[in-house]
Amino acid sequence: MKKNVIALAVAAAIAPGFAAAADSKVSGFVDIYYINADKDADLLGNGKETSLFTANAEVDFASKLSDIVSVRTDIDLALATNGGSNAGLGAVGGGPADSAVIEQAFFAANVAEGVTVIGGVFNNPVGWEAEDVTDMYQVTHLKTWEVLDGQTALYGNNVAGVAVAGDLGPVTVTGAVLNDIGGLTDKNSVALVVNAAPMAGLDVELGYVTQETDHEDGGSTIDTAGNVTNFNVTYKNAGLTIGAEYMTAEEILDTGLSFTANYMFTPALGATLAYSSLDGDGFGDDADTRTSVAGIWNIADNLSTLLEVTTDDAGDNTDSTTVTSIEFVARF
Image 1 (cartoon, one colour):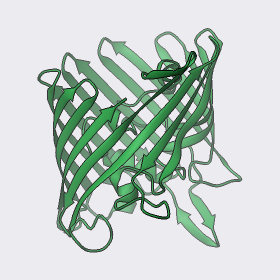
Image 2: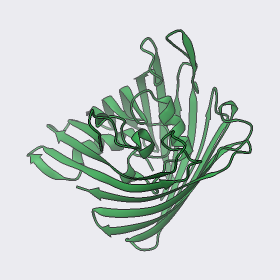
Image 3: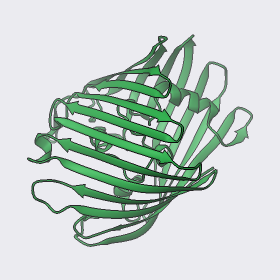
Image 4: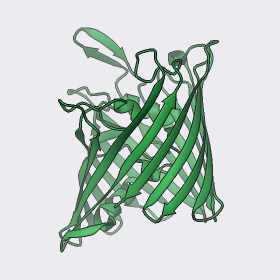
């Protein structure tokens, strides 16, 4: 499950890692994987089978200079060719198209008891799934996450602006004024997220973000999803984690659904089943679906490996495609 904005602010102050200075910490991870896909998947747009090793990484810098203010910057890195572009998969592999980009850069200030102000660039607070592989239960993102990622003009599923998060007892409410998530420079988006934990192990979240429906770009109109509403639920009990999500939008998307079930049989061994579907004017007559099955082996506290098979079905009598991935995630 993704962190909410308050959790991001806390993470900025207590991110694990070694101390670069008395009040600062450095942490991150490397993401190394092999991906194999048949030519029908056409991951690289060349109509050929894909068989490729690649690597991404992230370095996070966090500092808390006082009891009130913390600062965090996350830098995403990709294996690059000469010239700085991603060597192989680019954004398809989960990393930036360029060799290095900012994922997050924000401050968090506890301006009053239970009230935090966050400003800068940060992960989209709307939606269930996290952006980083270290917070995922499988290798491949859900299609619902990809919709949000596709609507945000910034790299990854990230937004820029100012947010205020307040702890109101039974609920946490986050409101944000953002740059238009689709990239318009003369408009703004507004987001509202409400989190609640009605019982032990159960988290419920309702999120909403506005967006202009038509973007003018060089005289042409770009269709967007417009305002997006997302409702998601997470249940955790012992080694079991279940997540469910419903999403709808003003345009393009009528219904987006996702279901994720992860079970850790032991602290070292686990498995995940993830399913997501998209239905609406932007996806043909039949729903687009994705099913991922993954096995997890936590080799050490800071090293995990995943074996995943993902099947995509674009509907409309098209052939389904299968992608097999082996991923190693090492944290520092």
